[in-house]
Length: 511
Image (cartoon, rainbow, N blue to C red; front, side, top):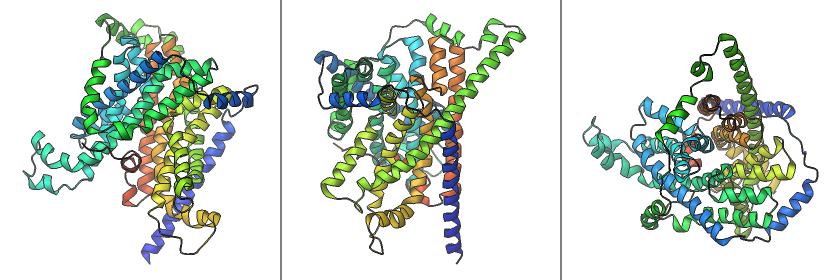
């Protein structure tokens, strides 16, 4: 009896939680800048579609060089991040390791790149470091959780109470190694997307030429580059294998050396200019107060717009995920129809939000609408794909019903708790991406960070990056607390292990 009461009480809590999130999204939607400002979006969309079906490589040498650079940055970044993340994960139970990992992953790759560009310029070192640092923090977190999920009895039986490298390598690491390999394969996919995005801020990857093609209306050339990105992501299953990596990783470091021409004086000058201007220049109190007021306005405006847009995107993502998940569910489609539906979700989740936002900005004009659509499609496709796969574990509905009744009265109620867990997990990522989309002109925190870098106000840029990191960490904390309070099922305690591990990507094949 108590179990039944607890079940219905939890159901009511989930409905109440969903209602409040939906209500907050409606309020945010009313306050958000959602409009279509382009003079003729239909014409631009037709031109893009025409270019999509007529891909053309304008310069074969340039295309090949950009593709190799994109893959090299991704391989180098993931290799270094996995190595550093593995070391950090061995100490993840200690507070300093968790804080370090959280700090590294709370800063987006684009913001890391904007920092390193000031010292190392538009070089390979900038690109690889921009991928390595945040990926190291994320990998350390997931590897650490995977090490906690394994059977701890072998480690306790062999020299209980003792640690050390040998103890870790022979008792804990072998049990988690398979899951770590799966997750590394997924991070490689993310690294390719990140490498493409870094091209939009000037690094010589595919994204650099893709931005140029889109800005100039060369949609056939843009189509070829876009298809190249999709091909790289999809082909991972064939070439991201252990036996190939033994050759590919050293080749990547040889073909694109991780180096840059820089001087210690440049680094010291940059670090000095990161000190807040009132302290660096010994300003009088009145001038300092004006500077703090100006900085506070940017913090408040950027934070407000970031949270506003993220909340709208979260609820739209949830709706899209629920509606799109039947495309990959055996309860609704099968055979070629299911493969086609999952192919659509694969394409959407393979394209970075930054790229989708850039495309929608061209079609719809500047507002928050392109960013909301970009994050909805990308994150909704990830969650929809996962829900569709999890639905295969469900039995047939007890009462025969049509597709609509089966969806509303059996499919959604059965998967709803897992669905909310995935949405809350993606919430932190949505806020992280919302902030960086400001580089494209949306007035989130990224807009003010990019402006500070452009005007060489490095102290302001670093302070705003710190505010953005604090916002992401707060969202992560709140998300974990909501999951613990409302989503009590043990399999949902750590959705990161399902969203970003074997449940999402194919395993990394062995030798």
